[in-house]
Image: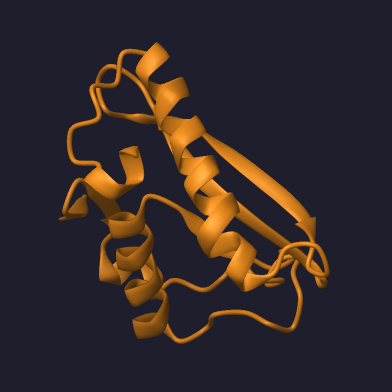
Length: 124
């Protein structure tokens, strides 16, 4: 069972109560507070993209946006990753994130997604 956050779905709170599997790769910079994680998931749902600021690989940043099909199901993701020295927060916000969202929406459109539930600014 999942809960809706706008047009996006996130796992139920009790699914976050389970222990994190051992052996996951990542850095010491991780989001471990459950409420902060839920808040970030809601933010991702409303902005149509997610940002990794070195949580997975140190000194690497990435931006990703979902690719949806005709049934509005997420069938993939479009992502850009680069060394953090080349991908500043300002560049992510002003240049990379809008381009990634636009490209993901174009790809989704080719798969029959009608854009319902996507913020108008994300479509521009």
